[in-house]
Length: 299
Ligand SMILES: [Zn+2]
Image 1 (tube, helix red, strand yellow):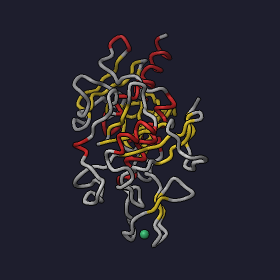
Image 2: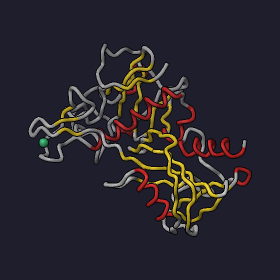
Image 3: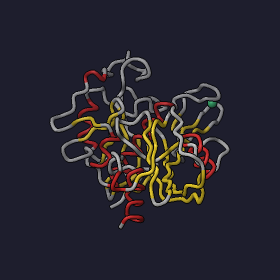
Image 4: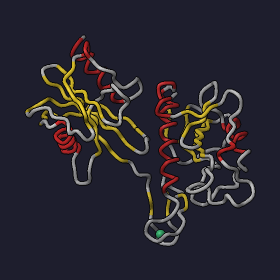
């Protein structure tokens, strides 16, 4: 079984299909993992069913098709939120406040980022796409060119404006994450935003006009003060927090003194596996790259 992404449904939605339902940014899971459409619809019913659905998919209560896992279709749903930024039909009948969210017994809302390692690979891929679409949908209800409410595009995973013809595709923000090796040791850094004691690889967003390699060299120079060489691709990972694609690289230390920028990076050093500080958990590309380094250099 594997997840096959798609935007065109080729059959009717069924109760046993997968429902990736987000409420307040968190994913609904049941004791068996991701719930079925039938299970999710029980919860959705308390929010007035499709009463909040608008042309642009304001609340995604009808579900957006994501693709297939085996013979089961996958849909992204989002509960409406009350107040600012939430469902714009709250004053109409049928919409409820998120304060009233009450999952059924055995169901709970979890933070997808922390739950990744609990999911199998196919479910994880669909969940990441669902999270990305829910986030993108929340930000694209109106045409940025003329202000008309967007409609879902019929032939692409996109939205379009019926007034001016503008087409808006989901935004993907590419970022690099890089392992740098010097004399067999790995550069690990503590970012101000990390939990206390946590170290990881250097990472940063690619800016307009940059190649992947240029972005890597710039980020490393800015954050750690050193020059690198032999930049090569290793792996990538969809990272919908909120809309990134992580591009994993490897490089060798070239020159310069290791000096953390003091803003994002507060400490950095060269480590061998037997002296690693706390590193990211399984399921993250950072961990996969660090583990690969350990295997390549120390086994
Ligand atoms: Zn327009």
